[in-house]
Length: 434
Ligand SMILES: NC(=O)c1ccc[n+]([C@@H]2O[C@H](COP(=O)([O-])OP(=O)(O)OC[C@H]3O[C@@H](n4cnc5c(N)ncnc54)[C@H](O)[C@@H]3O)[C@@H](O)[C@H]2O)c1
Ligand SMILES: [Zn+2]
Ligand SMILES: [Zn+2]
Image 1 (cartoon, rainbow, N blue to C red):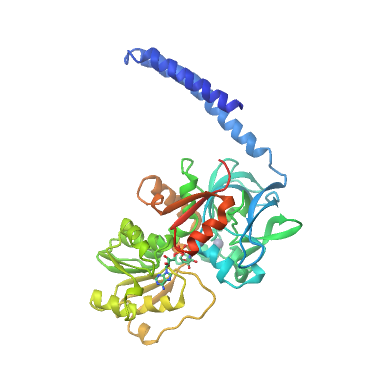
Image 2 (cartoon, rainbow, N blue to C red; image 1 turned 135 degrees about the vertical axis):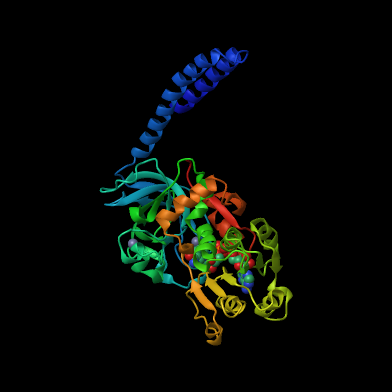
């Protein structure tokens, strides 16, 4: 039995004695009761903190050997391997990943993107963890802090960070090799080979290293197995509605694709006061969940012979005010644009693809529609993520409802299969023990 569990057992038995001793009297004895609690609880608290710090700091400055899921090549299952994770360099942070979601963008890289240069890589970009150690020059993070890795950085200094118009950052990993979808300056090796850090994050690993500009410090009480979803899918869909589309109260919206991103877009439309939210998906099993987030109408394109834009135009007297494409399919993107009402309709591209050009007739835009795109829902990452965590803790933002499956990292390929076949919303993988 280790020292902290002995302490915990001793606290428990002393607590029971106290309860039985003083339960008959609530008044004068309460003072004595509180003093006794204090003498036990305060040293216990410090011993827990010291124990945690000792544990995390024992590895500081050293290469850590740990478990990670490696995508060696496209279209093949990932393999659980032992990897080496180098210590953080100047302005970097090494993080113990506790939990991670699986997002469709991970599947895109593995199966759809057709990009051989982006391998081998550790995928995963929707995680949460605890700071293990920090490199020279890091002053705003310390071992033990709870954090969320960010696939969009926020340096605070570049012209994009200084502008309120965008959440892109000039110092992001993506400025170097966007085409390989990875940070090429990786801290990972496996079997003597360099392994890339997908989207600069790589959360399918027990440990990862990020620049401090791409890490958000979050509230100490945040449950990491839920708030990990704030690393990608939920801010993306939610922000697409509230920040990018700027959905208006009383408006009519259509959301195409009801994965976690689309459901978060539904949640965003509802939060912005939309009167009607039409949920569109080819998988009818998704509709029940869409109701939970506020969808009012449900359309399955498989059940209609007409173009879906025509179906929506008939349902809404000419088209919706806002549409959000959360699939990643250029045909659906066109259809989402064409579903908007002329004059003021706004359509937002949220789904990810770099495989095909998209197209539409110019008259669509000439007639007053606007076509926009969003990355991470337009949230400035370092500022936005801790606020969203606080909103979740205050029960103003749903997260638990997105989690349909929980597994360990070893089952990452099962999680991928579930998403491929439309059987989950989000699977959360438990990566390391907290
Ligand atoms: N822009 C960003 O910053 C960003 C961030 C995260 C994810 N994404 C992208 O968002 C998309 C959704 O991600 P997810 O994790 O929710 O994926 P998901 O696979 O869980 O959900 C996609 C949904 O689209 C539905 N769908 C497929 N074809 C359709 C069609 N023709 N019409 C209507 N619905 C259809 C599927 O049934 C499924 O429910 C992906 O393309 C992902 O890469 C973008
Ligand atoms: Zn994602
Ligand atoms: Zn910047």
